[in-house]
Length: 119
Image 1 (cartoon, rainbow, N blue to C red):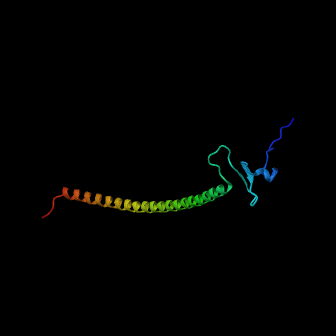
Image 2: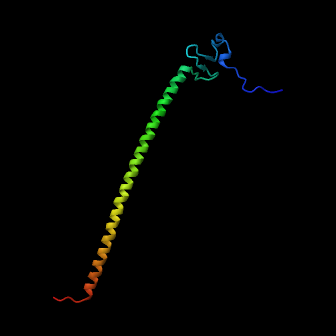
Image 3: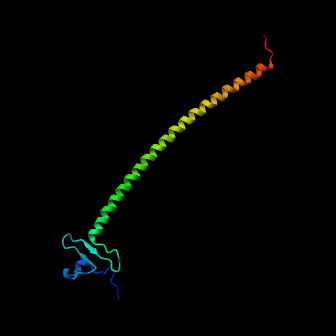
């Protein structure tokens, strides 16, 4: 004997008059199916679910905007870091040049101290 799979009762299979005062049904105006969860304090009507969906959609849009803005900030920070690295590299080159020049000057001064001066 084969078991039937997917054999569930759908709202459209039940006469409309049976929907009255039942925990599930189909809206006669827009045809949307709705349920009232049994033994649940938060019994949601399909209109409330639509409102929740709208709020979730708005929140998702806000989050997407926030993520986009954060990506822009991160890109700007990366650009700033790259610019600072260039500035630091420029300072490093200057410090190396100063170090070389001061080394030459120091060597020259040490060499000058080793020879007597004519006054």
